[in-house]
Length: 187
Ligand SMILES: [Ca+2]
Image 1 (cartoon, rainbow, N blue to C red):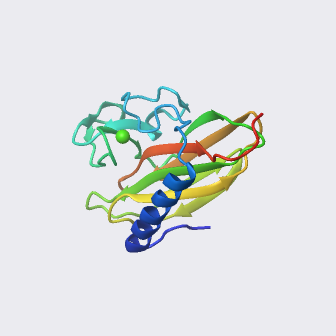
Image 2: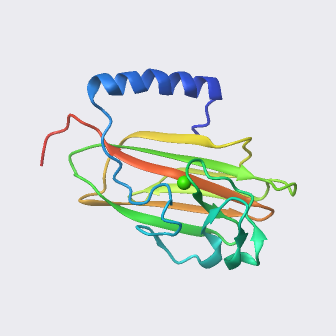
């Protein structure tokens, strides 16, 4: 279930929907803690992946990963999460959710080849244990936005989880947001 959409279509959709959201009051606060990783670490997130998932800044050495210079830029700010190893890394966060509401998830993903090629790599995202998107050998020329709407929560908490691997270079993940849709019944 890929949601890759040409850039011009995305821009048009975002412009269109930004106006709609403005009109309907859709935009709610981001429920993800440290969704842009700007603490410089995994504050708010859970990970046990060692060097398979790292919060990194562009051009800095990865002490956790042999001192290689990080070639993955952030989407915004200074920091992003990278998945630089053949062994998959996973990060997750339990989002406080209202069982009667619905939610929108957005994040940005990039594949960097460092001159060594993109493949093999893998990436997946799950919401409440259900896989929303999974792909291998992803190729990008820059950050792509992924957006999932009308997500049903698993309960009072819904676990959002990302898993990535990249053998020749790295995948980058940044600006993760989960927003509640306005208009549902209050609890
Ligand atoms: Ca960031």
